[in-house]
Amino acid sequence: MDTDLNKILAELPIKPPRSRLEPYREFIEELRSRGRTYRDIAEILAEKCALQVTASGVHDFVRTRTRAKDRSAGRGIKSNPLPVTKPVAAGTSPASASSEEGQRKIATLKARNTATEPSSPAFEYDPDQPLRLKR
Image (tube, rainbow, N blue to C red; front, top):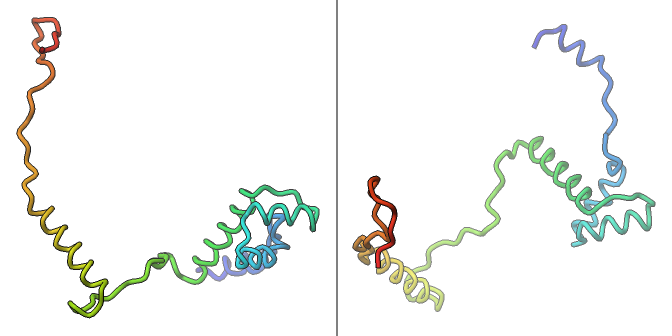
């Protein structure tokens, strides 16, 4: 970037946060980590902090901060929340038997002939004739 542009950026003051929830960010994060719902957090903020906010407002605030945190950490792609399981050798556990049975069912479904004969249409269109339902 040009040095003149860098000077301009250095001279600009940092904007204050726009959300009135920003002073309570760590408090909200702690409540979320303790399993509180957004509705619970909105009620706590109203009762204890005299701050009127909706549950969806708290949700939007948390979601925005989480996205900003992910972007700053360089994690544009979120990880898969489901654990990856390794294939188990046959006969080592009861789960492997059900897995093999499931694989066998999938293979039979894939091998099944799914082609069906086309059924006759409910009506035929002839531009010279009015539409009539077949009996």
